Image (tube, rainbow, N blue to C red):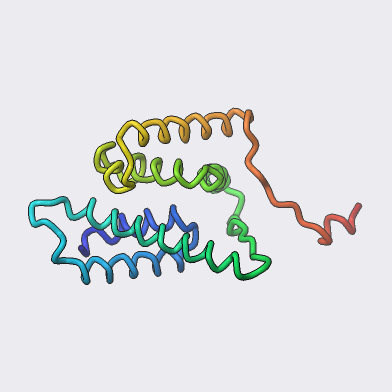
Length: 170
């Protein structure tokens, strides 16, 4: 399991987009894995098994949040972390990260598993619990949407400061 921690953390971060929440999600998944280690087939793929547990823990968290949101009003919006110095590569990476984060969750999950974790279509489909054809369709749509964002055909939402020094200078 220890050899899979890096990949689990990366996948969790792409799902929840917050380092602390990602760490919590990985910890929750590892606890579940240890509790259910008897269900792991010795001839099975440990990586896929752990990714499935992580994915299911994420889905459970989303359901919990939706349930709580129905009982509470309002919410907090999160913003991207501020960029460091203006190096071109840092700006480009932030643009790619922002575009990736604005993909629908299903497309973000598929793209992460296939492009970043380098899982096969079959492994990713098994983790997400969808047919391979569905996975391929989501992946194709994710890539097309990123291309459209790159070409300016689809805009990526940006934040606008209200009541800050920019308005006072006008």
